[in-house]
Length: 392
Image (cartoon, rainbow, N blue to C red; front, side, top):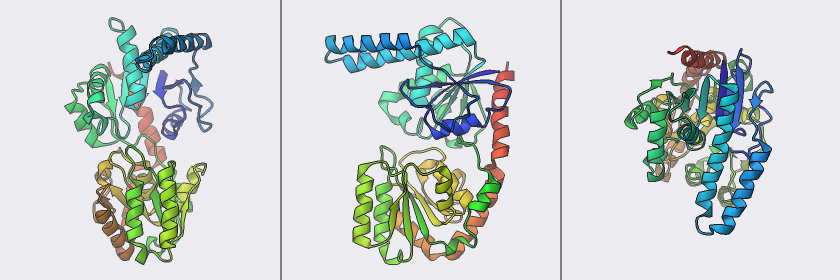
């Protein structure tokens, strides 16, 4: 079987997905959805990278410069089109030379849109490989509500043969957008966890004895970390003895807010370096009483799954299909991502109720054994491709 994966080459979700199947009897290729991306060092070396033809890239770059000189007002739009033509031609040449059985686009707004452009430009009246479109996070749930993206999403779902996602919510959304192909099984895009290792990383004893609070530091078009930090600030009266860790704090606004929080509350707070390993983050979740993740849109947040397996009590925005994993009020608390009072109330409840967090930890670990074991999810991923290959 020959599989071409179109995806972010530097993204950990791509790496985890592809590394699950690297030791199968497949010819596995990765086509970076942007030419300038570095290849993640954790990607298995058996996976072949499709590199751009240097001469065609220089030709594209030359045309881009000429266009900027001639079309001063529209050069950005034309350059984007030129780039799409350049990248689509690379995919087309790969299809002609290697004849892959399957093209799998991980994520819509970059990978699926590029695959769609390729199919519409070169394969209107020709046979195109079986195409799987995989929904990541906000691909339809948020972008499907934006005028700029709505029509292109409909085109992707009209042209692809298979659709996969990690939320039952997104099955219904794909149907609403007109998808009439075949749905593939719903399970996390990031694969599972090595539960034997997980049990060693978790702090011994009960969750209620832990003195760490984890906050996902995304403050972006979707992330709402500042609301979580403000809610924690309002809880300062009950946070003495706790240490707050903020991870994935990439933007200056959240870095500033962390420093101001420390100055105003005197509560210990640490921004975890972006270079920290995945194991470091898991260990901290495994020492945390609470893990907070807030965004206006997401799929199954990986940080939520990490909290579940590590025994930390999740406080998660309801916009991330967390209701498909948590029982609100029992195994976690679902909150509005932008309502500071509701988030504060959830934090206070999770800090005050030892029985709640301890029972949730036990139930969530049982859930992890059922739905997040990496060996079981690897077999599902292998079967995922076999289903497509064998489908007539």
